[in-house]
Length: 305
Image (tube, rainbow, N blue to C red; front, top):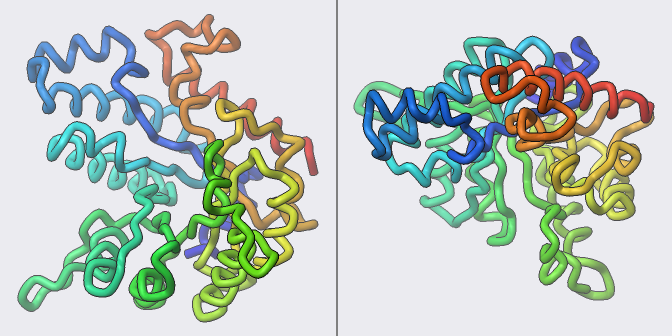
């Protein structure tokens, strides 16, 4: 699966992924009113507003980018109707040829981890049938329960040619409370990075492994170290734009050929119409504002090579 992602990045010259992390506050008032008129101010109404918002944005950006990253919590907050929209969003993106990274941050042990892996990347056994469930192409995974939490995902990745991005050094301000702590004189995130490289050896797909990692854009020096520790792992880089990461911070995450990393932007794209730079589009043309923001992001990142 990582080989397919690399091919799309090269074809589009766009090492970017758009995070489909919709808050109801991002949805223009006119769109919310339409949904509420049909479904009322209910969970179903909220989910419908999110679906129409997502669809409009996808319709305006699908040809520019290789992948999207829906964050499942933004859908779970609206219960079962929200999860239905999560699945509709995945299916619609895949119908447009986009690779889908499910930002689900799952991590557990034994049969529980195996169930998560099946639900997001594999196929559920139902009688004589094996049925895809959410069917993302990649999933984000939390490694801090150890190898027995990761192994079921590796098994599914090999069976289904799917991939994972394992959290190594996250972009949030308090990540260092645990991830930066020294273990035998070395930061914990380096040790996790070494395990990611080890796990990845069994899941190679061309020059890179289907086992990637997550390293925040807000820590470029750490990113450089982790790039060398995990040379065959693609790095998913959150934290660009709204969280403070700049294009100049990103170069250490890439290899010399310009590959090796894919940079995420979420609200900087999907809520672009709320920014001064794209305010001229107005809420009625929020999809066009998102397209303009994607084009600007691609140009911004490509100028560092």
